[in-house]
Image (cartoon, rainbow, N blue to C red; front, side, top):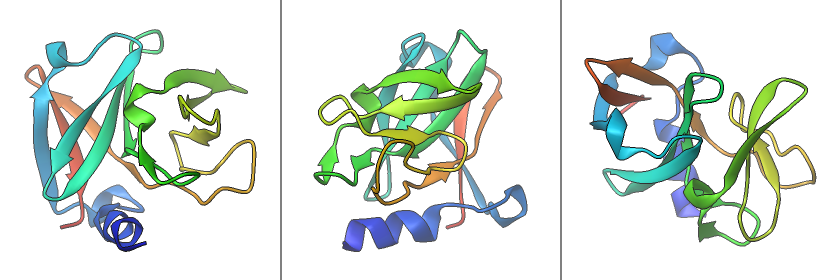
Length: 127
């Protein structure tokens, strides 16, 4: 439960809350239409290159269903035009816009803003 609290304290509800833009990696380090995990402090963050939509997303890597660090290996897709991630083990899906569970009663996941500058991916954190 401590890891979930840490994730929530680092996630920004809006762009004005961002205090740190963490340089995660070069865009070439992420697979097209897939994800990879980066580490920020003690947190694992899943970063997704949704190249079919020309968009980038980031969320916690921890799936709240069985508390496993696997979301970066999940499948990305869309529901009603909104981007989502599906856990590779349990098939629970979460919105990459707001973290809501889309097919169950699972807890909401933390999502993080992403920006691309000079070929690098930056993730926004509150601290």
